[in-house]
Image 1 (spheres, rainbow, N blue to C red):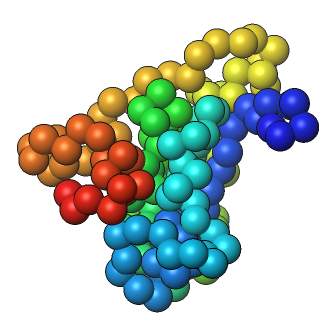
Image 2: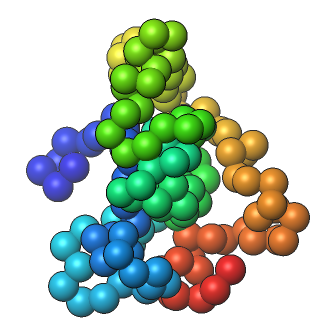
Length: 151
């Protein structure tokens, strides 16, 4: 995107909020963090599809959830939380059913309209915000993540 060409979509598998937050439960970014993904998320202007295993032992599952919530609502594609999957076995776990490839194709078909030669805004997916956060009235999680406020 920096070179003047737009990105039509992003797929993140087992993403991390930031490098330091994998090891430490920080609510803000420290200087020197090489991958402050949570700080970049609100500036993304294309559909983002997040895939994360619920039993990830390397990058905690909450990183995928929190990164999803840090994205601006119009760019959130429905995430794919893979029940029982770890960090390195998502594809192997889903290979027999074909669900991994099916979900990728679904994302491309629903959100990456350039694939079909038609330019359309991304599909809104309001049901993706976890019900628990809606119950507590957390409306602007991304802004709270950037400022370090607790939720």
